[in-house]
Length: 630
View 1 (cartoon, one colour):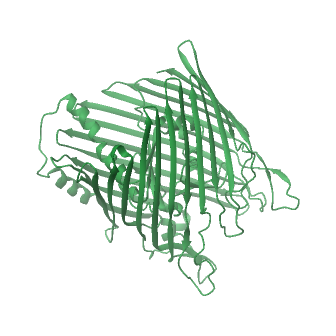
View 2 (view 1 turned 135 degrees about the vertical axis):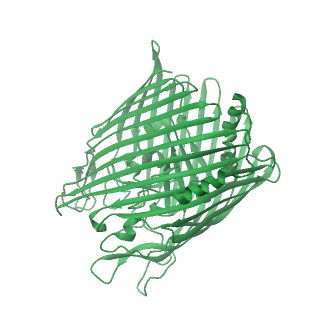
View 3 (view 1 turned 30 degrees about the vertical axis):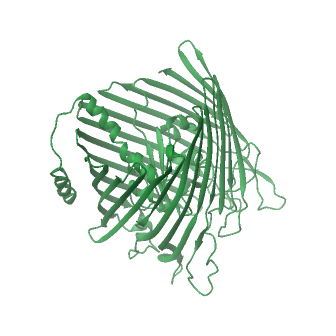
């Protein structure tokens, strides 16, 4: 912490910054200018923002369900089980997930379970692809996402939502936002239970019998509280706290016997941020704390194992304003990680200290360049650097055709299980590295004021070295080593058509991803994986959406295709899923209601996302949302 304090003092003493008067109008302008850097980054780097209006259609779902409709591949073990993301053919721990800028990936196993994040708690999601992930932090080889919860949806608002569904699903949530421009707060509470006792076809057994999933019930509840205070026109203080508890049974696979497994997850995440504004700069300091507790029980193997994972984070940043068309955000960060489980033979601790800068320069109205750079050291020993150099050029006026290109280097530290798990952990592991590049075109064509066509085409390449792989060691156990080289490359294409008028709004959208992600290392003369697609990464994937609203009615149709995937056992065939939603808004006295019916897996497909893990066929939900005041 002492190094961060010194760097923070030097930043605040930077001579270009001076005191000046600031009135209310200037303060409001600064809030707009805070987004200028993000807007310029978006032009040079590929990002997607999912706002609250889009989240409303998926409020009864988890983040895994939401992302499965996007171009992010989700490795889902099934209802009540773990789900992890993968960007652009990279692994789950090479995708970073943040909440209000706070890293959520576990220090122990390197990822975050998407099925533990309800969409109901989120006000927005920023998805950053490739080099854009360095805006948040290091390690996101394929990309990253930042989950936004700020309690500022509206000055006064209260919503109550209740959902019932197939297989014993019951979910209730209450969201309240209240306050003034001076002080405000947002509260969200929710609870959910589900039996997940769905029927499935067991194609491992003779005759493909229909069976029922057992021991897959879940129980979950949580609270998210946000508070904001503006003591003066120059100062803003915000705080967030998120508590969540989940108790879930872990079902057996198609080929295993009943095992009586369950897992309890309890997490507490908190964050406090202070920001000060002047006419030619603003600065902020942010402190956060996260505590993740996990208890795993396995009756057959007589396992009762708790583990804890804590992270302390302190950040400081500054945004100066220049007379030149230069945008800059720079800062420092310190992370302290502490984890403990019986396989570590005592608690393990890691310190990460780093600094970053995000700069963009307008060479002209058409041509922009930028650089995001980070440097970080671990335990005051290992120093790593990462950067993304980028450029964008408006080939045609009015965004009819824009070009963006970027490339650079990134690194990803081993998780603590890779380093210290006994037996097999390797404390001598080196960070994984990647050199990456990306180029793409975007186009916005306005047919009229009410009709817009947006299209994108992006090609990318990631060469990953020092890839961490667990392989059979000299003993009877597996060991973690820096063995593999991986080349993930491909292309992404998307197109959307939007129409907006007084009574009728509709959108038609489609996207396609082609992602060869192959093993480029020969581990032994008997290794047959050279040049083969990595397991559970589909070569092809596609999504389509059609949604419309007419007066008080709304409907949407979603389609996803996941291509064939390799596994450690047998290949899994591709599958297509279709979901359909229909709803109506109406008023009773002064309360507005929204009644929505949903049908998932409309075609009743029998499929497996993970080998020998069954997934539900056709199932239904009915939700009622009431705007108590707005």
